[in-house]
Length: 355
Image (cartoon, rainbow, N blue to C red; front, side, top):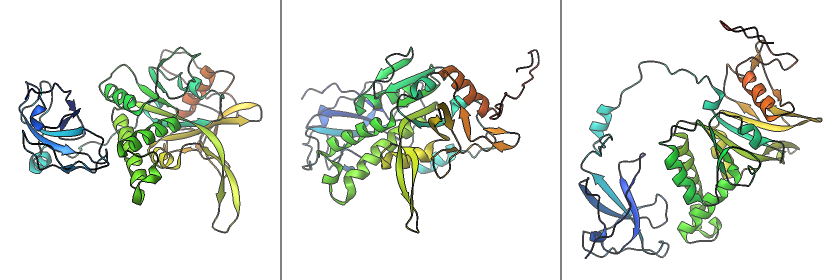
């Protein structure tokens, strides 16, 4: 039987390299010549992490396909026996893994650039969220909605979750872009929803019993977002804003401005971001709210940032242009913005006083 030429993928988050292809015999799978690989066939019956090993050996038919399995698709998990060129050895031995781990001897230092942080930027439509994110140096925009047609930016249009996963893989080895913009995270989550449901061969997550569909969607979305974060770049998640009714324990209710992200996406993203800012209007002026209250959901977890004379800055004027808004945002982050008037003078060696 001739061996199929398949594409092998390196998963940096596990001890496996894997392929996904259509075949019915284990020995149809051709391994790379530069690696000694022990093929261990695995079937992913639900397209997620609920995997089970097959009782198959090379040359035998793969059995055990369930009705939920994507037809003809098998995942082949393999064990490395040789270190790839330029890579690190991977070991499944717990003792060896423990020996390779070292506890830190120095404290980490906070990031000094606002572009290094993870930001949720939500606000009213057409207020300038994409234009503001475009001011971040070396930013790459993943456009799930057509909001960047009039902008001169690095961008790619997305409508498919599979393409997004490939983009993340590229970004993990990229050194050109410092910031990644997801515009919008709402539509990205919907794409993950469709992707996970297709893996389950269902039309809606509610069609799967015991909440299994919803868990599959959450796992798929969360796993890829964590892969993106592990690339070490700053990330801006863009979303729209809406008013949501909030009920208290006493039975009363009020309305609060929040992101339009689906609940599952909000639970994940809001727990990861360092800054969540609401881009809105204060009268006829645009402002960026970074200090939330009972009316607006916003905030940050940077204790020594966004301060003026010891007090926290709650609201940043965005001015008349994206450039001015970005400058104010950065100055506020660097504790150099007076929300009541002129900016604090900054004196640097060799430079004139800044007014």
